[in-house]
Length: 309
Image (cartoon, rainbow, N blue to C red; front, side, top):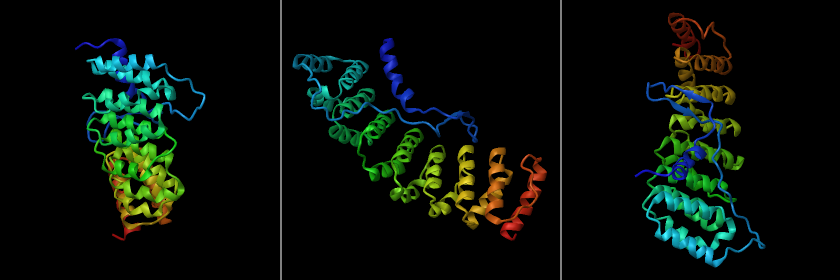
C-alpha cells in the first residue's frame, strides 16, 4: 500500500524524534553494520498538559466528529495522524480520552504509539498509566514513544524505569531508557545505577558510565572492570576514564586496562595508559602510537609491574 507524504512523514517522526543527536557514525568493532553513537542526545518530549482552569473547552461537535473519523478510518497511519491532531489539543481534548484509550489496543504499533503520546499531552495521570503499560508493548517504536511520554511528565516511577532498562532487549530502546534515567536520577538514587550496569548493551553504556562518574559510585568498579574490553570503542574509553577517576586499584580492573594497552583503537590505548598510571602510581615506558611489537613489549612490562607476573 502506497502511503501519502504526510503519512510517510508521520511514520518517520518517532525515529527522527527519538534517535538522538550523535557524536557521529562509527564502524562497529565486530565488522557489523555502522551504528550511531548516541551519547549526548535527548528524547523528544511530547507536550505535557498542565492544569489550566481557563483552558478553552473543545466543542462537543468537533470532538464527536473527530472520534467518528477515528472509528471509521481503516488505515493505521490515518488513525495515527488523527491521534497526533488530538495531541495538539492538549488539555482541551479531554473529551477524546475514551477513544484514545481504545487506540492503545490498535492492531498497528504506529497508532498505539500516537495514542500514548496524545494521552500524555492531554492528561498527565492517564498518560502516565498508558505510557507505563506501553513499556511492555511488543513494538520497539511504541516502547520508545512511551519512554518519551514518561520523560515529559512531571512524575515518574524511577524503579519501574530501572527494571525496564535492565530487561530491555532492543539496544536503541535500552539506550533511550538510560538517557531518561540520566536526566531523572538524583544523588540519593545514584546507587541504583549499579543494578543496570552489567545488563546493558555496549551502546547504552556511555551515559550509564557518565552517571557512575557523576555520583562517584566506587561500588561500580567491579562491574566496570568486566567492561574495559567490551565491544564498543566509545564505551571502552568511557570505562577506562571512569576507573581512573574513581581511583580504586581493583585487580580485575588493572588486568583489563593492561589488556587494553594493545587495543585496536588508539583512543582506548591512550585512556587505558592514563588510567594505569593513575591507579598504580607507576609510569612504565609506553607509546600508544607504537607498532604492534612495541605495544606488546610495553604491555608485558606493565603486566609485570602492576600484576606481578
